[in-house]
Length: 410
Image (cartoon, rainbow, N blue to C red; front, side, top):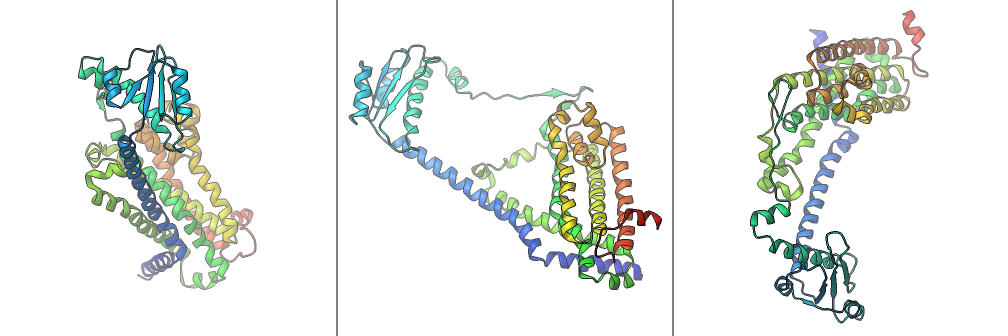
């Protein structure tokens, strides 16, 4: 009973100590605050762009044009208050002398040759209106000569397609809708290690720097201490995840069907996601193994290093190992049988990211999945046990790194 009591005490102490740190909340709240600011900027920018577009569409200015292409329809030009002229040089001179606001020259074979646009300077951002109206006049004229509304829509690019692909077994592939759910495990893995790894590493070194290790080890088993720190970090990670997801959920609830105003995915598309139980199970187990491996490694580094400063130098190397697979992501997605992809799949410190990517895109077979999961979980547990032993033997070594030779002797 005392052992369980000690473990619970460690978990509660480490959890409360972590969430009471200003740095924890600074890191936790920075993401949702930045997301809210980004959403506000994008929303404001969208509104201003729309307002400026409406303003420009209502703005009147004098236009003359010369059409050598034979495409411009006079009635459409008149509707846009554009007048036809025959003298190109005079029209350009009139724009230069501010007698007219804009002149458009449409050359022969307008699809290949350059349309010339001249205008009175209205400022860097508003000068684009001349180019936009010159193109609009030509497009509207070309569309009017097509005697079918269907062809007009096609020329505008308003074409709906429905791609259906089939797997080797003849079943219909769900594409991205099936890849997104397993990819969530990859996102959780990065969040867990990047946001919590430093806290986990430092929590192992803090007692050594504070010179209280002797007192702790007289009342606690090193296993309880290490496992307690690990579980407390996971609890803190859950708190961070909830805080980060809160603004996104609120944004969806407030905006509803207008979520496209700030470029959020349409809520209706969530219903199209395909949940493959096997891939989700494999993704979850790879996530578990990856977290055990990386957290165990960080705790081992914390037990070896005498100070947090030295330990954090190694933390950057661990983070680098997580990002290395993205340098060959094109090969992982397009040709997973390549030797380098196979090496990254089974090498422990690149395995979690590579395997989760392959699992999401259905290129990780059942045998490879079993090998990866087994290696990650077994190695992760062994490294955590190693961290316990390293902490026991190196806890009171304050002035230098723990000697590997000394560990092997013991």
